[in-house]
Amino acid sequence: MLLLVRLRALLFELCPDHEVAFCSTCNQGYKPEQLGTDLGAAFSRCQQCGADLRESLKSHARTCSSFLGPKPLARIDPSPPRRPFPHSRHYEVRY
Image (tube, rainbow, N blue to C red; front, side, top):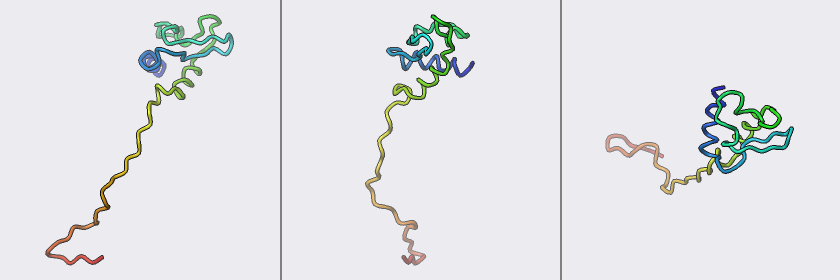
C-alpha cells in the first residue's frame, strides 16, 4: 500500500500529461488524474471493468522516461595522473 501511495504522488508530479496505466481487459488507458484521488483500491482499479491496474502502474514506473530522467554524461578528468607519493627532501623516491 505504501508503495502505491508513493507511486501515486510521483505519477501526479512526473507524468501528468500522458497515460500511466492501461487496462488489458477493456483497452482503457488512464492518466494520473483519471485514476482518482482515493488512496484505497479505487486508485489501482479500472473504472470500467474493475480490473487491477497495479502491474500496469509498476511497469510504467520502470519504463517511463519521466521517471528515469536523462542519463548523466561521462566525466573525463583532463589532468594527468598524479604520482602516488610526493617527493620529499628527507627520503629518496625511486621509480
